[in-house]
Image 1 (cartoon, rainbow, N blue to C red):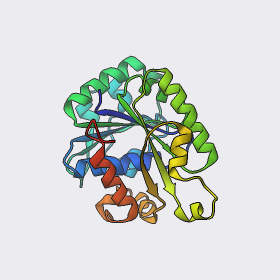
Image 2: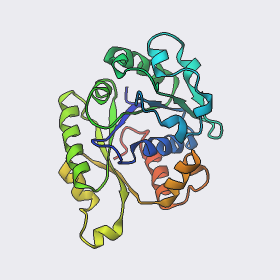
Image 3: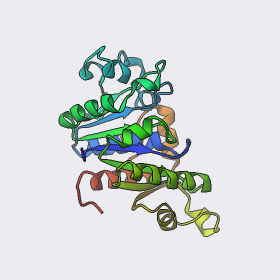
Length: 244
């Protein structure tokens, strides 16, 4: 399922969910039918980030347990025509997401949508491990912090061992001034350390924070900021098989 991408990070606070929201929006604006799936059971956030929190009736666990059909739980974005969300559950156990049930759901979604983005909770266990056995490709999100880079290296080792080798790196919240002061490694040095191809570098951009506060993708109001241009560029590279 090459159109099923998992998005993961070794630690929290890397801006992974923000990447999912804005990359999903950018892909949809490029004309693709996109569904983002929130796998953060108990700590869902994509419904808030997309301004859809007041419309959630059913969730991912309802779908996996057979309480409703996927189309009953999937929400269409009010502004971006080809963007949908399958929200996570707030008060259920992550043990209810099994590898088998997640695989079946992703196969169904892959037939209905051009792109499926799985927003995984940070770390390794258990949801990211299960998602890595289902997804065809993965984006690993890190910042320039040494702890985030080291945790990303661990993700690469674990996911590769499970057979997921189509891995790509996004360095988020990159500050070029810190690079000039020799406070951080360059993005290419980070990619070399992690050992997977660098897909893109997203600069520190206040527009991303403001959009999060407004509960909307930043591309709705500020598509031409530095980060906005990167999200659009990533969207144009992702769909093809030979985008590197």
